[in-house]
Length: 291
Ligand SMILES: O=P(O)(O)O[C@@H]1C[C@H](O)[C@@H](CO)O1
Image (tube, rainbow, N blue to C red):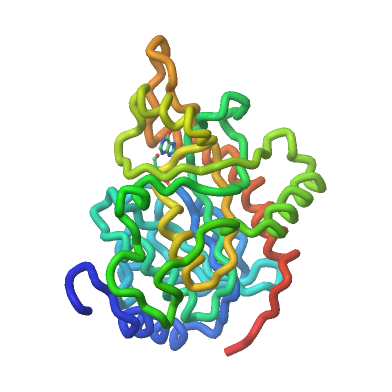
């Protein structure tokens, strides 16, 4: 390590080498489970799993609904690695730490990152329980200078000034929507813009109105840093938000959002999300390689 917040190539490599020595799986797809969405990993067959606390260099999960396990296994014959629990900036992790696993995945040979999250909706047409295919994001912390790519650029991962347009892969988005049609679930599937805020507090009414005016469809406290880092190192990205609550936009609305309610709604759609991610992975154009 260079300093407390600086992580060097060797640090990522050490963790990746340790994982490669512990499992025969060689994943091409990584899945990050959002709040209450850890059951996505349950669909993996032939599992090898590791507690984050046992993985050298890995940060620790502190949020309820994030189990803190890295699970390797197969989804319909395609080898994947799944994070049951992600890291958030509000937990006190530096952004380099929150995105540490993404670069480790790159070194494991992962080519596609699937991110999922729980989010509140601002779009008036969205309902609680809707699944939003992420079309684009607004990275509020990033716009304010809190970016996981801050500091010396590691050219081995990617360029100093990476583009961030077209990051959420168009073909995967189309494939996901087609799969939703086949699954007969399009009535609760949306496509929209996700906005990351720092949290951990939920939005004030004035903040909610601001985000609404900016064209944000769903707001959450994660995902954008992982996507920035994945895109920087050339990974293909696909993202899903589960709408767990409507963000309060009116001073007359007395409803208060809380994390327990977020976790409850996550359970409601767990099966559909699991099927969608499984089908998507099985339809993706990826070849397995072996240890
Ligand atoms: O990890 P995600 O983004 O799914 O978690 C969301 C945002 C906060 O961490 C938490 C609020 O309930 O859920």
